Length: 417
Ligand code: FAD
Ligand code: SF4
Ligand code: SF4
Ligand code: SF4
Ligand code: SF4
Image 1: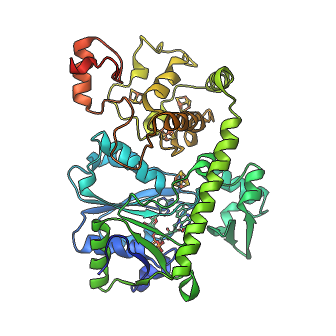
Image 2: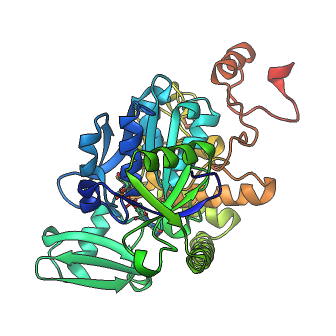
Image 3: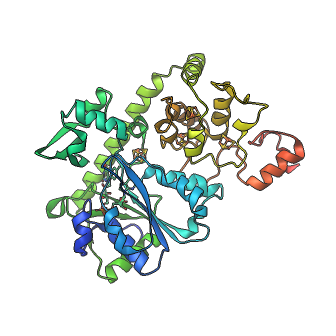
């Protein structure tokens, strides 16, 4: 039986899942077991839409529908946490399984600590993540750098530092470093991301560390919680999953790769943040870039930290209605409210029609705050800096005091008076 802390190679015995899976099909087999045994009512996963570059969320309630959701979509830049909050009542009324990348998982924690997602009702299977590529960039990169019609590509993967495509008539790989030097490759927030193995999920699955005869055929599973251990044990008992202890050499390799990815993340942080300048220069740069804003609210709507019913950016006292671009206060409000909790998921940048590097600005600020106060968002239920997370009480405080500060001043805590 599996237990917390186990490091396993795992593969499914289900031929149909095996055919569609990225590696050993462990993730999909585990979801099949969870649905069939009614451990969950539904699973939220990502599946291919009209083409490889179109990742769509799918809520699956019948295990027969799972096979279409197996496989990794590296152009899948969705954030599932916000969808659970928006469309599934934060899993308050259902037992939900969800496949999460690091950023999905961090978004889950940020919403859970604000009582917008009920993690008691959620099982998270994490997938290691080296990064994802924006669909528009992927199409352009494949046409320009690979010289291949993006519509002729039937498979893409990122393996051993290369972005690899399979297309009608062949396959080709180009080093991700080389692509990124030329402005292609992973999203910029992914380059800075240091959450590569999502250990705060119940299981962390991936291919790093799978060596020998199991390479490419098994999924590496790190068992991160009792919930995760029970799920693995149940799937083994049901005959859906086979496992063996991970090769110790494989463990070493996995740790080395993770370490190298951390260093790469640091390198990109240094480069990207240095490009913003410091102090007044940074402010000027942010003001210049955000002057393109068309106030479409996509950044707010997609951000896992923004969930307020009455968003302060809609308060005419701060942001003049009908004015474009909005006055800078629109952006300052977001910085003030969420910079301590930004999980660098990239959504506010990915979905900005004005191509404003919002995630870069917010992440740069988050990292400064982390250095100052030691709070790392997205990895635990630790409350964010200065933030009051009890929304009802906070709204009552706002009404009672006439204050419009979403953050309580710790030096003068009005709410507790
Ligand atoms: P399967 O049984 O094939 O199931 C895959 C699951 O992933 C399904 O539930 C599917 O819906 C979900 N999924 C697919 N695309 C996405 C997406 N974009 N966002 C959220 N969920 C998705 N492993 C590593 O060890 N190193 C890496 O660098 C690495 N990078 C990855 C990058 C991305 C963008 C993704 C999605 C995965 C990455 N993985 C990486 C994990 C690896 O590709 C496999 O997903 C994992 O090993 C599980 O394999 P499996 O055969 O058990 O999964
Ligand atoms: Fe993966 Fe991190 Fe990018 Fe999310 S932000 S897609 S976890 S690399
Ligand atoms: Fe402005 Fe971009 Fe946000 Fe839209 S997504 S409100 S354009 S910053
Ligand atoms: Fe993600 Fe942007 Fe919100 Fe940060 S500010 S959590 S990058 S959407
Ligand atoms: Fe986000 Fe602040 Fe608006 Fe709430 S009030 S949705 S935290 S910008």
